[in-house]
Image (cartoon, rainbow, N blue to C red; front, side, top):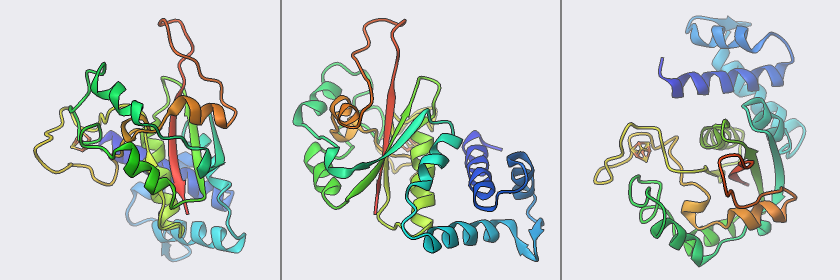
Length: 226
Ligand code: SF4
């Protein structure tokens, strides 16, 4: 099984356990991988989907649950934030274009990613977002993409994710062709013109310029929610 598939399966299993409060994540994941496994005469996949949707609807706008899900998937922290606290700036793209070796290397980076102006116009369509915090071991982009999918399926049809860093889903990215993983590949916050430092500080996270390999490294992802 591809690493990306296993990640998704485990994420779903985690969500399922949260929704039902029984069984271990490993057990549910194993059941999930068995296409014939059923719970109460229904396939585990459909049970999960119903549980998540029901939970969301019954408790109203339970966006706060995604904080827990983000942590279950490996995030150090996640906060529901006001979308207005997300800062875009023209200079961010210059940092990609002049100084980053990844410029133009993948479809999720400039010049292929949204401009700061396009990103700001998109942020203006939302009231809330989830800011995801991790370190160098956290798979921020995969967590953000998985949460976007879960939120979408739970009824938040506008949900959209931004990851961290260049896309590493393929060994190499052929920028002359369409993306091979359109459901998972998302621009990073910085690639889309978001000032990650100011956005993190606006929401109580500590982040400083990294000056050596010994420095604390902080990474952030974002999911717009509505
Ligand atoms: S998923 Fe593959 S094709 Fe798509 S942006 Fe990432 S590296 Fe490129």
